[in-house]
Amino acid sequence: MEVIDSIDRALIVATQGGLPLVSRPYDALGETLGLPASEVQARMARLLETGVIRRMGAVPNHYALGYVANGMTVWDVDDAQIDALGEAVGQMACVTHCYKRPRHMPDWPYNLFAMVHGHDRAEVLAQAEQIAERLGAAVRARDVLFSSKILKKTGLRLVG
Amino acid sequence: MTERQAPVALSDLDRNIINALQGGFPLTDTPYADVAATLGISEAALLDRLKEMLATRVLTRFGPMFQVERMGGRFVLAAMAVPESRFEAVNAQVNALPEVAHNYRRDHAFNMWFVLATETPGGIDAAIARIEAETELPVYPFPKLKEYFVEMKLKA
Image (cartoon, rainbow over all chains, first blue to last red; front, side, top):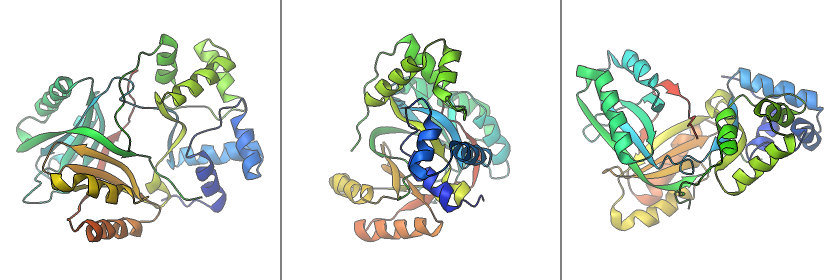
């Protein structure tokens, strides 16, 4: 884990809503925080290097881009094989997130989660078939949960 | 409450901007000018398009995306099976917590799936306990045991 100090935290609070849309954004942040722009840049470079910032740039609204169907494909596979299978499924172009998660028996037998996005449900179901083919005989049970409504989407918010 | 948005017609320029900028925004003194140069447009044009796409919600944000776990916090996916007759009321109770970062309705017996994001690990258990107490429904946590891949980049 990366330890962040109070200046890093202030920088996160100042940028979690977005970067200033001005010619010299790091100068603008520096002015707000009372730091030279060079320190803002150096700290952001370190946060990127350590993964506290996953990436920096445009975050598109996937519905606005036409990806209106999002399917959480879930699979029950053997725990002994899940790492190799998860890595393989994670490499597939249609998969945006892939995780091992706990089962909750008896209601929930699935331990592998792969999120896929499509322009309609048929495209998502076709992608789920591709994943099923990749997993092959390892699949013991499967399901696809389509989202029917976004109920909230604010992302992380630290309280400044 | 955020509704899904209808697809919008994007210009080739906006597509290029989105496809080029889903990561790797530079830490240079004049980053917008530097990116604009690689796209063959002016800095003013790039800033104008970014502002417009944010205003029309084609972009939800422009800036850093944080990984809260790398700074000692936690993200945990959780699900609930909410009786349809109580769905709206429970949704209001769940969304009222600032720890709830995203929440989706899904077609399944587990019909509410939300992500809790907290600055400290203990915040997750506290948020779950509070939701269970307020709604009198069980919350099923699905912490990630392993992350195989995460890269939410979609072609515009």
